Image (tube, rainbow, N blue to C red):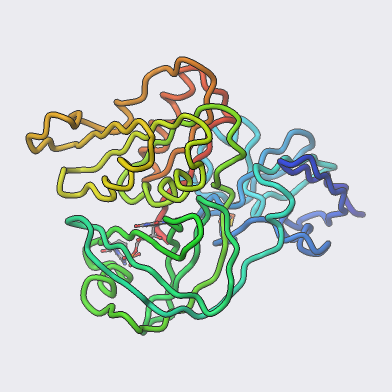
Length: 318
Ligand SMILES: Cc1cc2nc3c(=O)[nH]c(=O)nc-3n(C[C@H](O)[C@H](O)[C@H](O)COP(=O)(O)OP(=O)(O)OC[C@H]3O[C@@H](n4cnc5c(N)ncnc54)[C@H](O)[C@@H]3O)c2cc1C
Ligand code: FES
């Protein structure tokens, strides 16, 4: 006996497919040639998140970081884990055109430079064209290992990335000590449903640390078409980066540092402390560590922003 699944995408496209009991939504869609946005496929990264608006289901094996209890109660699901138990309708926060799947290729490291105490900017020349939306990310192989890590594009049309250097991190150690122009790396993408929507109202962007990377790509693509405000937070002044790009973007920029270093332009504390109720309806884009995302979402909702206008990317360990 098969179940009927209605897949509704952000651009209004709908597809009706049949699924088997104990088959995930992702597997059912793939069997019908629809490659839903996924990454880990283990319930850990949240890339495949969607909303189930009708039908009974089992959420499957979702990590509490990727799908919080509150999100689960609100009908959000991880489609790589969700097992429909009856006919279901799912709404995806991205257009049908994103269901083409990721491409794999090789790339050459063109530039690598330290831009803050714990942040490296690097740029790759790709062996093939890779269309992506501003805000999406790639998976990049760590040279000399089998491991790969997720990094968000920080330009709208170039393979530039900003990586936080973590103590004894695999990619961090490569970027800090061994990376040199000419190195060859494996890359696949694009991934993710965090991307700039057609700007129909003012935009608020909230970034923690290297969570600023996809925000920079989005700001470039926004290109002043709507008023934008950027709230950027870091642990200390030495960890701030890309301030020249933020200043040149035309956005209203506010900065918070957890340990103030004496610059009176920066507010002391967490970036979420900069969120005030907006004067008008806005679209919000939030990117950074999971705890910061949850705090920002709670403040944005308390400020009256509808859940569907709050777009988030959690930088979970990859
Ligand atoms: C969608 C998405 C987009 C992302 N985009 C970006 C981005 O643009 N920029 C960015 O900086 N990050 C981004 N991240 C996070 C990034 O993918 C990596 O998780 C992060 O950079 C870790 O890289 P690493 O290889 O240096 O560290 P890892 O090797 O993964 O190690 C991470 C930390 O864990 C510790 N650790 C590792 N193994 C162990 C162990 N066995 N026991 C205890 N501790 C351990 C290490 O000491 C280190 O501090 C993104 C994540 C996601 C999910
Ligand atoms: S792809 Fe579903 S949680 Fe990662």
